[in-house]
Amino acid sequence: MTTPVLDVKQLAVQIPVADGILHAVRDVTLTVARGETLCVVGESGCGKSLTSLAVMGLLPSSARRTAAHMRFAGEDLLDMTPRRLRELRGNRMAMIFQEPMTSLNPAWTIGDQLTEPFLRHGKGNRREATDRAVFLLERVGIAAAGRRLVQYPHELSGGLRQRVMIAMALMCGPDLILADEPTTALDVTIQAEILHLLAELQQEFGMGLLLVTHDLGIVARVAHRVAVMYAGEVVESGPTVTVFDEPRHPYTRGLIDCIPIPARSRPGVPLGTIPGLVPSLVGGIEGCAFRERCAFATEPCARPVPVVTGAEDHAWRCILPAAVPSLLENPA
Amino acid sequence: MLRFTLRRLLLALVVGIAVSAIAFMLLRVSGDLAIALAGEDASPAEVERIREQYGLNRPIIVQYAEWLWRAVQGDLGRSLFYPESVANLIMSRLPVTLTLAGLGLVIALLISLPLGIIAALRRNTWVDRGALGIAVVGQAMPNFWFGLLMIFFFGLSLGWLPISGSDTWMHFVMPAITLGWFSAPVLMRLTRGGMVEVMTSDYIRTARAKGLPGRVVVLKHALRNAIIPVVALCSVQFGNMLSGSVIIETVFALQGIGYLAWEAISRRDFPVVQGILLLVALFYVILTLLADILNAWLDPRIRRG
Image 1 (cartoon, rainbow over the protein chains, first blue to last red):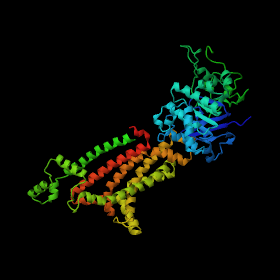
Image 2: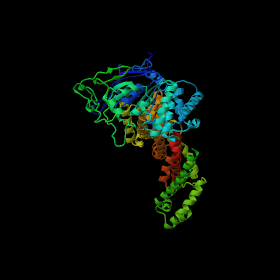
Image 3: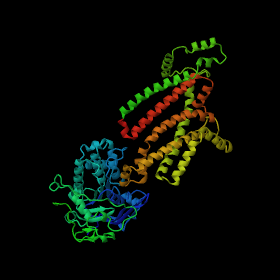
Image 4: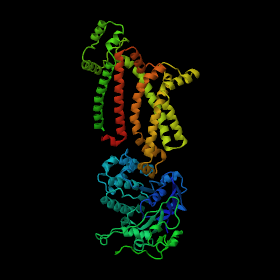
């Protein structure tokens, strides 16, 4: 088996807050192979964005990051010198952020910001950088690319800016792209286009893609593998088809039941919902974090739950003996 | 950018005319100039003769229009005390004041920019608090007092620097530091505030994600955005230094327009006072214009406004 481009084991991120320590990410293990798309799904505050920021070394300075190991293409990211980390960032691993409106510097032109990583990482001269920028802008679907180079971010729409961010991430031909909810801030019509584009580019350039999202519909369309996060933990992971067909964690089942499907979701029939609230992560959690909201919860759920591994890398953090059935009245 | 500049230029012209009118009017309402010129124990006939001679009996609008028309042509009248035209008098003193204010601003920026940036990056550490302490001390101490302390210490006790006159660059060291020191705190606080805000913004995270080293992130990506309000304040501070030079030039006996203004006011040499008022007001207008243009260059979003 070849070395995965990203290999994270037992990642934890702790952030000091007013009333204690927030265990925002607890025991996250995931891998991304070359040419593979891994979707990390979960609701707001489940630690999925922090996980991607932790990989890039972009956590807020107050946050504490620990892990059994965290490797990029076999190289240890935990004990890496700041210099080596800078050599990798924007070069072999790149990130696309959630907020296209504010992620570009308002004071510099698109061209300057696009060519910056290319020049910084010594990929070529200014001429080559400009050529590459034009090529990529056209590739991400921006018309009149040459003219865009001299424009400023405020002259572009949100959708265009996110395309610029994608082009920027691709400038140095990275092995891994981390995309943190890249379409959340965009119009629904643009969302699909951007996702389609990302999936296409991922295939075309053979990169690893770690796509953070809260939208299972997106996962179904683009992910090879999926990791479902809840309250700072990965509660289930595996090949997308397996996880969708035979979810082993009730939370995963709950998320799937929430997806509106035209054939199933008839007018008047309520969509699935997950009752209750996410527990507070300040001070840490004993046992299964989902048990308060779970229809199948029993007494042993209050004790630490081991990770169970099934076929084809399918793993889950639940003591239920079989796949979780749908709780909807008339499942598809 | 060109359209923006032209529009601002036009605006500056309007403001310039307005401030000249205000400067002119203010001096006229501050007392009867004819009595002031004739002296307190002059006879009414004598006052009337002076009023006639200087044209002070005409409507004030006419007086202003005539004065402005001449001022535009470079004629600000004649000094009542010196055997020179006001324009020549001001021109001979202006370089001293401009040098002083320019050096003062440079010193203020040399102190405030690095301190402000470092305080922002090392927020809530002893560095930040130390910089805040300097700011408080700088702003709390009147600048003439600081100037006198410097004269006492470096001039008299140590004898390193001359304490009065404007013959060599040595003469400018203490006055410029006094002016700069006084302006530095507010510029520093603004730089710090701007940097603190900008450093938490998303585009700084983007810059880090690109693998840029810290100094490029700070100086290229952060400072350019953080410095925009500082530029605007600089122009105000430079104007303050021109007017503040009245005190500093008096303390250090520098022969600049501040000193000239002080002399002219105490001698009721009103054409000179009027000329200096106009000049300083115009400097403010020009500085604001320059700051606007510089800001538009720094921040492309302003250019549309």
